[in-house]
Image (cartoon, rainbow, N blue to C red; front, side, top):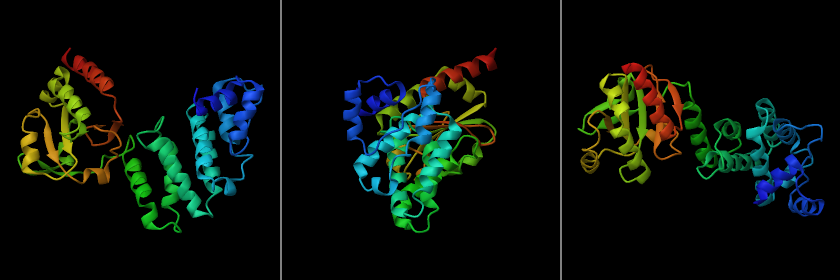
Length: 301
């Protein structure tokens, strides 16, 4: 059992011996809260932990120990998927408020949130948790543009590619060298597929999308369009590489896509409605193929 799982086990279920608990507690930066015995459900106990996590912490001095503070922050975040949402939001707001007068610490918080719930190596990703920390940095005038540039860009692309938002416009060069843009695909559902010919996962996804009977039928019926985007400049070499892509697809190149879209995952898939609004993102391929199977079955029967 790793350290974080041990912490969760102790805090939620009290499953370790007193001696072991004392050893782990001594290794912490501060003493964590202990949910009252009358709180029995997972949500009740994690909500209590999130709400009271920092009660015994001297925040200004604790954050100076970056490594120990990071361990505590990761433990704090790990309770959030199970806790009541409003309490999570309130707790994050209070934590941020405690560092508003020390912008360098606010930046540290955002960088820790980036590691915890934004980066691809995170145990779980959550835009909802990441954005408050990122926005606090973006809105702080005492943090230089240079220091907050990365966080600001991440906040921008995450916020503008949320489900329900209008998909950002893209200008691109098609594989035949002509120019077009994403807004010209309006009128049908669009699967925006950002991929690279040299990416193996992209290649496998591309193969499965290209050969899927249901997807091809939906494209042929005018209900679906696939826009395959190469996230770099058009070159004759690239055009040659993609010459064999499905002829039904719109295949294009643009270096602008990473300025407007959240591309944490490779490949990246966005599903848009006929008006260009984002219906879903971070799609799992298996779920996507099953969904298209269901849609095509309804359309053809």
